[in-house]
Each structure stands twice: as C-alpha cells, then as structure tokens.
Length: 167
Image (cartoon, rainbow, N blue to C red; front, side, top):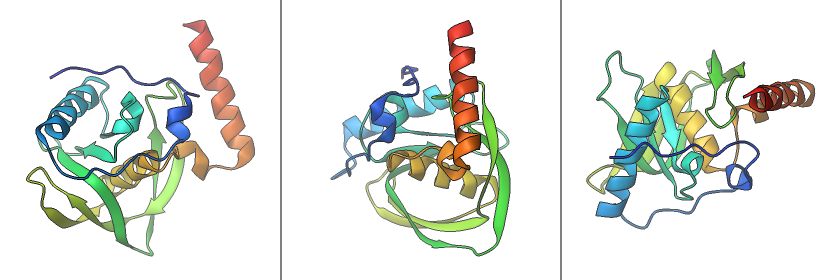
C-alpha cells in the first residue's frame, strides 16, 4: 500500500467526472488500498479516486471511531436522500487550509459495487452520509466549495492560494 500524492487545486481533473468501473478487479482493490492508506495519512473521513489523479468512480469512507472500518465503493450513486438536512464543516486536502459549513441531507441510501464486486445498497447517516455525498461530488467533478455562494467560494479559494504560496 502506498500513500498517493493529492492533486492540488485547481487541477482540471478535480472538475472532471470520473469514469465508471466495469468490474472490481485486483487493480481496483489495489487502488482502494492506496486510497485508504492516503485517507488515513491525511487524516480524513473519505477520499475519491480523482483526488489522487485516478479518474475512476472509486471512493472510500471511514467515519468510525477507530480506523479500519473503511467502506470501499465503486460507482456509488444516491438512491434516496432524507429531507432532513445536516450542517457540517467540510474541507478537502485538494484545497488545504480552508473549510466551510455545508448543508446536506442527513441520511442517504447509496448503491455501489462493494469489495466483492457485488451490488450493495446501504444506508448512511450523519457524518457517514456527509462524507459519502462529499466523495460522490468529487466523482462528479464537484467540490464542497460548489455548495457555497460565489462570493464565499472566491474568498476560500483566494485564502487557500495565499496559504499555498506562503508554503
């Protein structure tokens, strides 16, 4: 397993939709392993393959109290979202040093290919739901800042750029 480098904003791949995965192969499993290692090194609650430059619809999420509970997903899609919303402070290693409160559905039902290559439907609630939705956004070429007003988004990007230049 390898900790992969994170793409820096504004890499164009962060704004591109990822390609569907035809099957869960050994290569996909190795990418997932690297993604979990990279997520744990950040540390963070999730990671999508485009964040490390792999333009595949792969994501990992681990919001457990102790690590080692990562859910590996290929081609995740939200089937149902609750009407009850939840606010949570979100960030991204692609845009380090900035964060913002984003409102998303509190619970979601997601369909994906699991580690065995089987179609699975799973309910996620709270932080798990927030992280899964955040990762699906990345797979669709969106980032958490896209949920903000244009002015707030511009301010955060400018602050991240200033921090990046400072080193």
